[in-house]
Image (cartoon, rainbow, N blue to C red; front, side, top):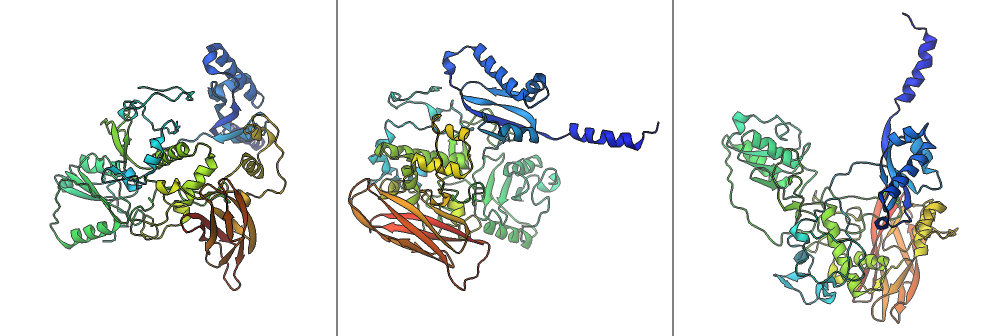
Length: 556
């Protein structure tokens, strides 16, 4: 039967509409007013019902809302997760009861000698100037480190040798040739290795296109007795200790080139597997990992990110025994500890330092502690050279933020950039937060936003100007947390830009005293302006303390 073209035109929009793509979203509505420990399951059912009713107003029926929501947050946070069309999610975000709506995306989980590496001990002994000693090892401080990868049943988390839980704790304790070409066989991709050529041999695999563990599995399945994993040019000097399925050695890009040259120079290349040994005090170190998050900040470009860097590569840590150490389905091994890399390793280092500083200075605000860590960080490695990235090039603040953490210096910063609640509320106002969202931070009280607040003037320990008009003045305020002293400003100018500090001398007579100053940036005449970031530094020093802030400017 022939269908009239007018009928086809009528049905086509309906087909397109019904097939609109849907995604998983989280609708966040703030916190519940109830105490979940005091309520019955019936109450939680009522909360879920209220979520269905709320979503019903955006959909065609209650049943549609019930089908859409696949999880309700009924205990502590108020909200739900649902499968929605993008247009519906946008409308929900406009509702006054809604704090935020965001896409529910899957996130992949991105030391044995950290304490010595950071100067807390030497040759197994705590150093005389260690923050460990002066902060009493964080006695009485409670640290909350949120991480999806924590395995609380691990022996690492038993409380043997620790004192009683601090009385102020209100939570619940759980006791319990140039090889950069992409030939599949060189990359050791799935099914590319010939067992006749590989069996009983040590295989050289180039990094890239598949996970490091998968390359080892492919070599093992093909009959190899070992593997050398060589970095490509992008990964440069970054070496990771992985739990491979067969004996393996990971080499950097330069060494990989040498191995490829050797193999190509002879018909019968020879390799040996020897016992491993630990090498201490390698140089240069630290350097920035290729996988580490990089700036600029795409959400709030006026705030430099990252803020700080800390040890986070090949750190031995407690590990879940619910899956294998490589996280691959083929890995049936189970181990209580693993060598891990990523923010999940860096974060505990910083969290511990924050705890020690809070022990020493209970009255310090989070902003003051953050400032102390950032302004005392180092941008030099253990050869007194600028920090490098994995490609062996000079890194920038977009790689390391203020620098690599120096715990012992952080306990005596001299000055800090403190920030008040009003500063942060004005910051949120400048970002466009509406009254309902702001009430989450003011315990329901109305806050009147400042009309002339600029994010550039947030009292942050770094200075970032993402759109430089050629001349600009911003302000900062320093608080004295040390002995009386006079500080003089020193500036390392970003290329093509002159930075002036007024006043450039600050005299502090007592602890807690605050003084403000202006920073003026001016483009130099005749200097070519381009769409590139330039980097500099502001340092306040009394001859004993060096309060350092990175300067980042993009001249359009």
